[in-house]
Amino acid sequence: MSRLLLTIAGALLLLIGDASAQAPSPEAMDAARKLVTTLKIADQYRAALPQLMLKLRPVVAQDRPEIEHDYDALIAPGSDIYAPFAAAMIDQIAALYAASFTVEELRQIEAFYVQPAGRKLLEKSDALAQASAQIGQDANQKAVDELKQRLTEALRQKGHKP
Image 1 (cartoon, rainbow, N blue to C red):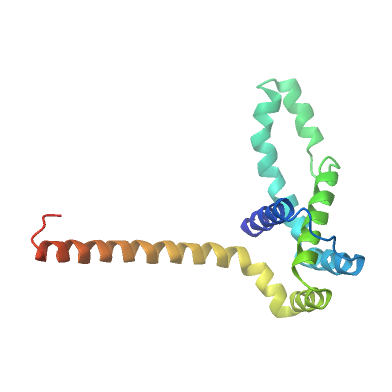
Image 2: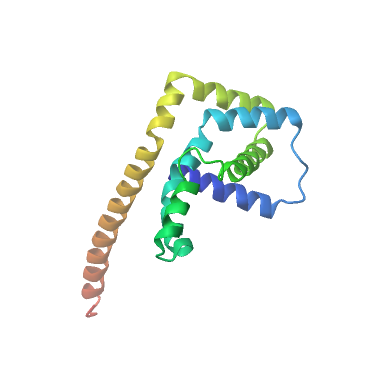
């Protein structure tokens, strides 16, 4: 899910910051849409929706059982309530990719992700990103602790009381 959020945030920043840029060619958009499909970005969006809908439920239903029941029916899996948002998001992300890469680059990237190594990377990317973030946090904490100790000792040697 983190990859999806980064992709959406990046798409929004690019679209806001570069609104006057030339629109990608139809060929670039086709290649980008194919890549976005291969990357399963729409699937990631659909997977994130239940959490979003659970957070929205109390705001909409306001603890009224009759509304909660109808709300649950409206957001049931397979509901077409999400379709326009998913389609718009996919188009915007495809435009982001089409504006960021050449048609040939898009095809090369897509070709990688349909190979076994690319599929494996997609499958493991969220877990790898989380583990990498934890490693970075742990390393930063160790560095802070060590540097604090070294700086405190250096200041003591100069006659300071840290």
